[in-house]
Length: 170
Image 1: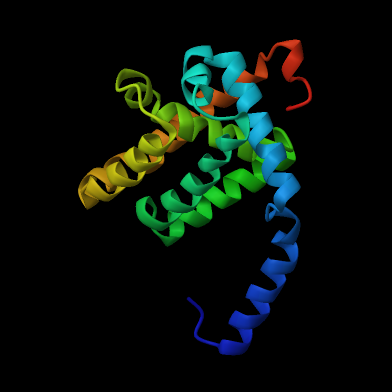
Image 2: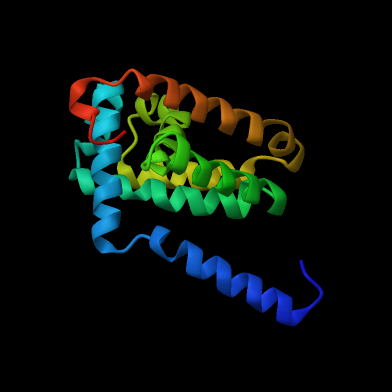
């Protein structure tokens, strides 16, 4: 991206210093998982019941991997930066747990297949990985950002009118 190795290193170093608190450690992953479980249980009980029918709630952490897969396979470099900026701005202006809302958006994006095909957790993860790999470049180009933003907007709108048991999330 940058031609100067010194400038690249300095930018990377400062970015990592700024981002360090955002990298989940064991306890933060469990908090993310619990918040995502609470949001899903409140807004989509059928999906929540399907996902925890074979496992405990802490397996909701698989959506964190979906972030990485989306950034690696679905979005180009500039789109990835745009989405990270959206998440950081959302954490500041909407909710400190805005990344959880994005996780919920990723989860609901795949809801139909999870419920319809009665997928296990392993099958759910495979579905998402396989679906991303099968999408053509043109399909991704036309749909990825608009769909992603639509789902984030919809999830944010739902959560703005949250019940009292979700006050700790927002």
